[in-house]
Image (cartoon, rainbow, N blue to C red; front, side):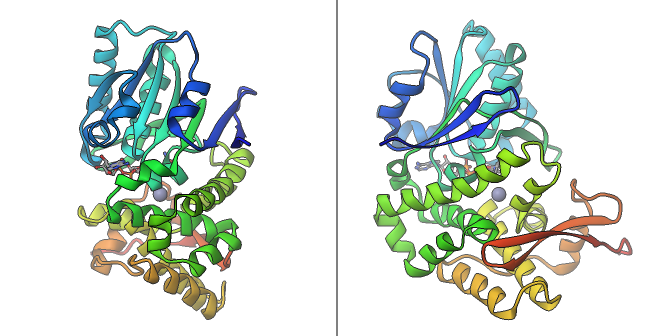
Length: 340
Ligand SMILES: NC(=O)c1ccc[n+]([C@@H]2O[C@H](COP(=O)([O-])OP(=O)(O)OC[C@H]3O[C@@H](n4cnc5c(N)ncnc54)[C@H](O)[C@@H]3O)[C@@H](O)[C@H]2O)c1
Ligand SMILES: [Zn+2]
């Protein structure tokens, strides 16, 4: 039986997230008559050549530094030179960088063309590709330019993750632990009862966990697609995490999110929002998976970076705090401007 999750889009249609073989599901989901152009990066082209083989492709660079308007402009020029038109279907195959850029280009090219994703990192399968946030960075500010627009489909194939380096895999686990803390204690227990190696080796176990994590996100996106309220829960660990990322270029997004979760778990316990046991449980799990649980950045520098958070409203910053594993709350915290 096909395993899938349907997320309603604002226009009444549905975005489909399916779990299984990418090759088979693409044959089923891609519009039969449309011209398909794949956007991918060189790693995907090398590691999964057979998946890309049937399609026309455009290969983009790698890393956060290429997630820019310049890359978007280059891609639009390339689409124009290839005479892509409104009936062309864009397929992003890659990590969150590829899917964030592909979704944005598809949303603006000729005022919007059809698109779908095959995410190839764990982080992109459970987070970046799902929920319709597309965009790029500007002047070092993350995701400053973008739009909400959900893909027609997302195909999560856990077999594609075999070629992913351990460090990237671990970063993806951080986003899954985030989903578990927000809304799925059973998923959290799954991580407690298994090890990093179990998830690396057992694609079926991994696929079940990916599906659970996506369900947490999908349910929240369904209720609050435009992040007016509840969707902010998905920022657990991200307020601090983004600030860490700004200060430390070497850290991966997922690693920064893990560190951010560790920081807010301790803060929530100190404030009595959750028990000390709950905070320890979160920190121990992250630690067992080899993820950081505190900020590697000097606290002064970190504070200044938090002050520049784009989601800050006046002196108020929304922090997501765990109440217990499986339930979080949004709390507006007043921040002090007096920085040196
Ligand atoms: N839109 C959203 O809602 C959302 C949510 C979370 C994160 N993001 C964004 O996602 C981006 C990070 O995504 P990411 O962590 O996937 O990083 P990434 O796209 O940079 O991929 C990480 C690295 O892994 C390589 N790679 C990808 N798949 C591979 C595979 N199967 N085998 C071998 N190598 C592979 C890539 O080439 C790259 O070098 C950030 O820009 C972040 O802002 C977006
Ligand atoms: Zn994230």
